[in-house]
Length: 405
Ligand code: HEM
Image (cartoon, rainbow, N blue to C red):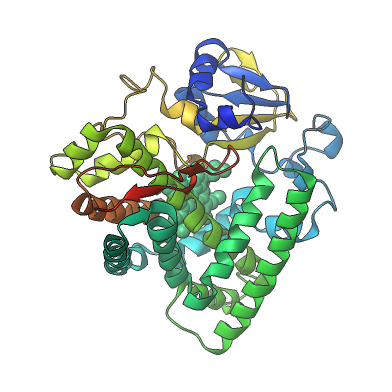
């Protein structure tokens, strides 16, 4: 049964996904009233369907939305700091606001700026691995993936190194807001974290306004002053989103990949032999066990049909990425972890107008990390102390120690 609050389900949702795809390709999740899609073709199409959207308010009145369908964090007044952030959260807004804001962020987020992070990323990973060698152990999350992602997104945006652990703490708390099974106490804590994070970013904007640098924050501030293109609330939400999205998913993707290689030593040997391009291995890591499992969309019109089932206007569909990525109708031996597959058609980065803005950066980080790790250990052996992250939507590990000898 689909039950995100059940740790056993969250630890391995894939057998349930198989059952859903085969028997209930549109599965009504009673807990939330969401209609879950699990087939690759349906999830792929849903992301591109403009009759679906992230914000119902442009097209529907509150009374046209299914009773109880508005999740608690989005109910008016429930979590004020979160609501202020969400107003300009790219993930939660629709055209024309979305188009305009996304274009400005993309301008500042250039391929050159991203590629420039490769050298520092290689150096950061080499440092982390050298230290691990001395100690004889390596926690992939704490010692490798987290510092790497934080350094890269922090440098790109222009967050001082000394403040990055603060950002990490807020980020972990804020993302709990999105977990379907979060308690009211966790949501209040998440709202308090949004508030502290907002204050911090506001101060950073003021500081950078006085002392511009060659970073993304300066680029966004310049866009703010070039006419009326961006306001401070928009810049604040965008910086917060980038700081959160910029490491949560990448860290989990790295850890899921290391765990996949630990469970498939033959694939690790193949990777180390250099016969499979790193780019192909990284795509398979993202396909086989994606770090983000579920996104939702409002049904804004009548007549929306998936797998012969009409989904009522005013309800929500859920896009199950992990299920779509292992659809046997799309991939041969879909359940097999095969790094030579070289399939970029997986849906780990979403699709349509909200397609992941950080995909090139995430790919760069994962490439650098796995290449360095391949030179570092002939076998990936998990040590005691492996801990999954709680929750379902963000899939990964809070600790993933491996032997470093
Ligand atoms: C392996 C790592 C990552 C994965 C699997 C991932 C996945 C995703 C997915 C599935 C979406 C679409 C969500 C939706 O349709 O509602 C998305 C959007 C987004 N991602 Fe990523 N992401 C990753 C890394 C990053 C990084 C490193 C950054 C930033 C530096 C980033 C920034 C964003 C932003 C800003 C959006 C919103 C785009 C929009 O709404 O127009 N992501 N990501």
